[in-house]
Length: 111
Image (cartoon, rainbow, N blue to C red; front, side, top):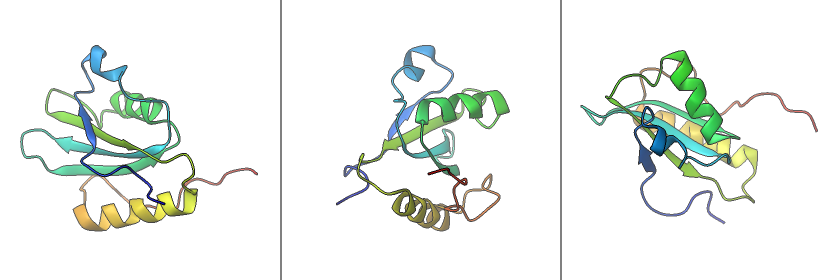
């Protein structure tokens, strides 16, 4: 079972309201990309991609016209452990400047 469908992440300009409605409220992986350099500056995972994108807009990580929010929706059967492992590998691959931790730890959750 694959975590994500093959292919590149879907990219949206986060400050364009018509694009922000396209981002699903589903779990998955996301990247913040500098549109001028195409450099991945942040990698993360979320249980709600749309909410996380808006969190980053409010915090300033996604600001101006030079930011792209790229995402891939996770397969509904993917375990959180596998999603966290994938996040760690993408942080290692891209070495994004805004990631402060190695990633993949996730937040504590209640059963």
